[in-house]
Length: 435
Image 1: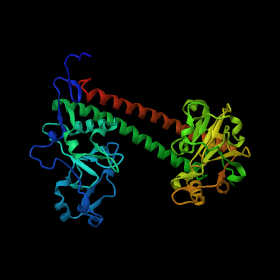
Image 2: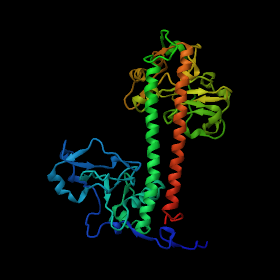
Image 3: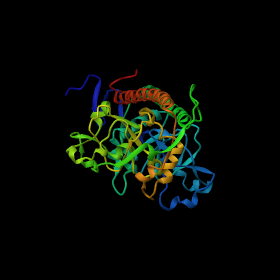
Image 4: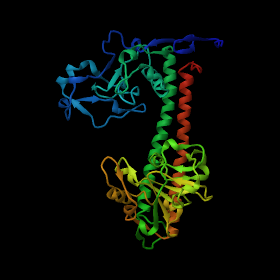
């Protein structure tokens, strides 16, 4: 295939003719011996060296999705720092996770960050800012990580790790510095939009959580409602039964909808609308005659998990929206709650099990060590505040409106992330030029 005029083929791909490509080790400041290093290993840094104050230790755990989050520092004293001075990091350096599932993830330390020392699971890269843009280089590394391209510089063993020698030799496209800075500025603006939306979504979720705690406990009453609430055990409101056991390997795109307990744990939502989500729901190819009626999910059913790896997960649940009665099988490690009475509004069920008090009861009744489990007998003992139906409906409408607002913001956030990803692909390859 002929190259587009003005472009050339290089070992890093097709790039503009004015661009170069170079190894990471060529980007460090001249005469700087420790421009690319990893943290001390073995006997050099042990728990006995940690202090409550002193020189901060920077580990890979502070690198999260391109953001440096420094909390709960560990420290070493000045003497130990001097012994490991090669591992000193400062504001403006790139810090990369060296070991583990996230090896290759990186972030730039804030300019105000204090002089620190690397832990053994991290490495640093110092860029010569007189010749290159640190932010540009970091965006290239970030893009390579997100696309899985840093696998080429990983070592194999008990756990994956970045090879320091291979990282130094890693070659990347290098526009002239003024173009690096223009690309960096454009991507910085895109990052700022994504971050602003992330913060707004997080804020709206916190607000909703607060409103939910007040409305669902009766601490805050809506206008026009003043009657006393009842408190009822779930055993008076629901009949409980188990699901049909099938492994994840048995699921496919063929058969009847199947609710695996892992999909409850893995979902941020607390309801499934079978009509709109039918195509995405896993299927089990099995005759319905083998499925108990109590394991078939109907509109308004609530499905709890009976096992969780942590206490917080013991109260995880999904409310079923299925007015068309589409066959939907509740699966392995699930407890199906079918209403005995009409005392709980269907919309209200999406929220009423999310209060701190209800979650606390689930934790209390859970048993186990490595895995927490809860039985049908114990779920029936959980107490639930129950207002009259009109108040339930009014509360559900308010919380549903808040959910809709959050969903709209999440959609905007997803689009902003896709836009940023597209910009990275175009700008970092020179397919779009900022001249």
